[in-house]
Amino acid sequence: MNFNEISASPHSARKFWQSVTASQRSTYSVVPSKNLKFERFLTELFKSTKPAKEVKDEIIKYVQAMETNYIELIRGLRDKITLDSKQHKQTKSAITNEKMHRNELECLFVDCIEEVRKEIMRRRLKNEIYTRKRFHNVDQSQ
Image 1: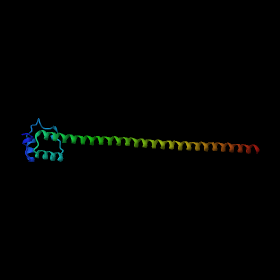
Image 2 (image 1 turned 90 degrees about the vertical axis):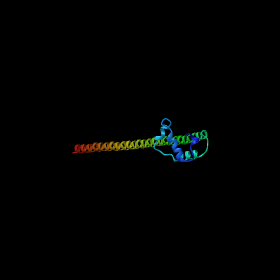
Image 3 (image 1 turned 120 degrees about the vertical axis):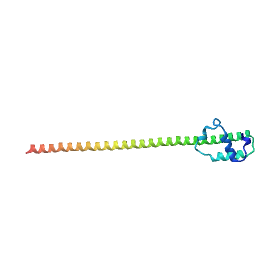
Image 4 (image 1 turned 60 degrees about the horizontal axis):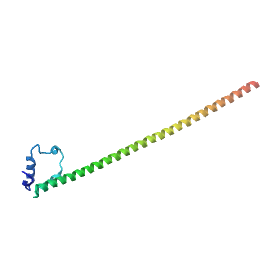
C-alpha cells in the first residue's frame, strides 16, 4: 500500500500506518502526546488526490514549519531564562549591596557610640581629677 492507494477515509490512513513494519515506524510513535492539528493535516492530505511525491513534499514542509516554530519557541524561552537569570543576579547584588550599606551604617553607629563612651570616660576622669584636687586643697587648708 502506498500514498496513492490510500482512499479518502481516515480508516484507510490508519490501516496504512498500522501496516508499516516496525523498522519503518518512527521512534517517536511511542511519545504519549497527541497532535490533533497534525492528524487533521494528514487526514486532509490523504483525502486529496495528490501524487505521493506531492504528499511527501507537503508533509516535509509541514514538519519543517513545525520544527521552525518549536525552535523559535525554544529560543524565546531560552532568552527569557537568560533574562530572568540576569534579573535574579541583579536582585541578589542589590540585596548584598543593601546589607553592606546597612553594615556600614551599623559600623558608623558603633563608632559613634564608642566616641560617646570615650567622651564620657574623659569627663569622668576629668571630674575625678577635679574632685581630688578640690579635696586635696580642702585637706591642706584645714
